[in-house]
Image (cartoon, rainbow, N blue to C red; front, side, top):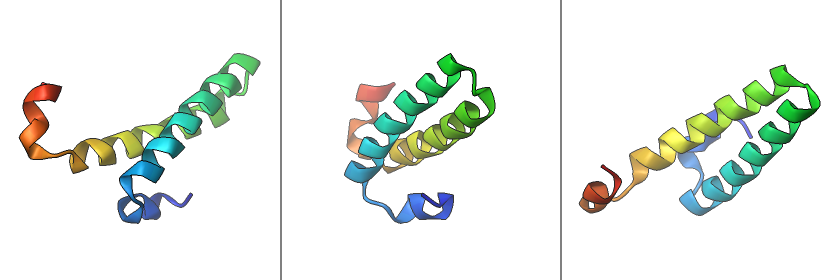
Length: 64
């Protein structure tokens, strides 16, 4: 996925992608491919930041 597409992708798809990215990054880290693992983890963090930005403001009290 191109990082420019994160803002245009729906939240459900981003959640599914983030779950897969985190698992893939962890697996790569464990086998020793730290550079690729960090690249995937940074993409995971960008997606998580976007999902946090999109959350319903009425539910903020549930997050803080």
